[in-house]
Length: 200
Image (cartoon, rainbow, N blue to C red; front, side):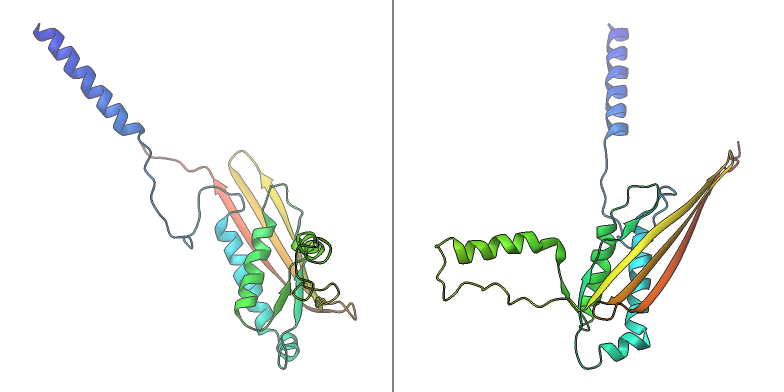
């Protein structure tokens, strides 16, 4: 009888221990903390690029002259991802445009929502459900004066002991009327991963 009770107690203890060991724990972390999970493009890289590009653009003498007496209207084109990774470049441009908008020096048009806007204007003007005197009329929108665009590329080298990835992000601001590039800058990131000897 004692053996049966002892075996049952051990089984219960092991069950409780295994349950505790496998229980997932979720904690909030610092969104700005340096990410070192792996060598691939991550949140720290996105934040670094967005912050550096925004600061560079806002401090540019050319842009300073451009924004002195007005807030230029900009649209952000898609960033070309030339890396071998699946990277959400829209998050990158969202961060840049949000910071620029917060600066109070630029205004933006959202080209990604043109179809949705057109559908709403069609509804207001052609549906017969909206008071014509209160409907937003076609042809009243303001066009962009500048286009902000960029490229993200990478070079990856790997051998048995070490992996090295180099990222380069380039961004430009083009005057749509003249076709001139008024501002350009780039930033680089290098990340390495190597096998380390672990002591006994």
